[in-house]
Length: 113
Length: 114
Image 1 (cartoon, rainbow over the protein chains, first blue to last red):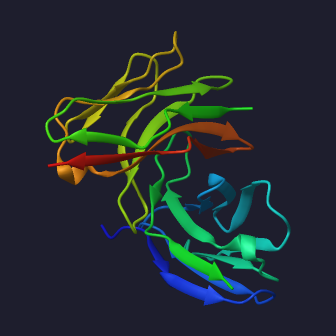
Image 2 (image 1 turned 135 degrees about the horizontal axis):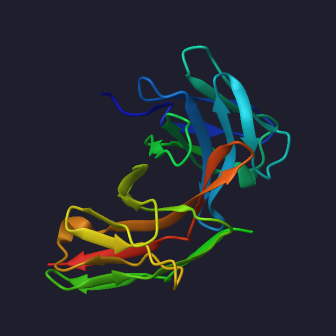
């Protein structure tokens, strides 16, 4: 089975712009979670989608949003970018059931100038 | 709230040395516990997991035992290799609003010298 894929792998944007990141889960997985990784804050949960519905959201401002399509692919959008949004954004997929294991993609490295 | 504390690094060892990375957790209920590894420039890879007390997870020579009495999940390997150099994350999975959310420790950077 192919693993979780994320595109693009690297992105450079300037403050005030918006960005969309994409994640394709492992075939058959219905849940996609997004995490932000920074040197200062570590890995933080952004949100989780299951069957096109957001099931949970972390403690991030409304500039961070996402969606999931019927084929389980997910996109994450960040509007009005700030310097502090520079991070590695990781998505993880799972079957979405209780105590299921999450499998991570390689991440998208976002740099905001 | 639920949290994970793991030993701060960096940790530097010689090849074939014994490795221990300590991890303790605070959680309500009975979370599943995980170790993930991140190689330079890559995402997280699941290394091993344990879903209930006294379970031992193992993979590629690494082991960790779910200790409910000490709320710990320490990672061990008897003989490390240069290729084990990476950042290791301890995590717990908590049930939250109908789904599972991973809570991570800060990560421990391991460097193994030949």
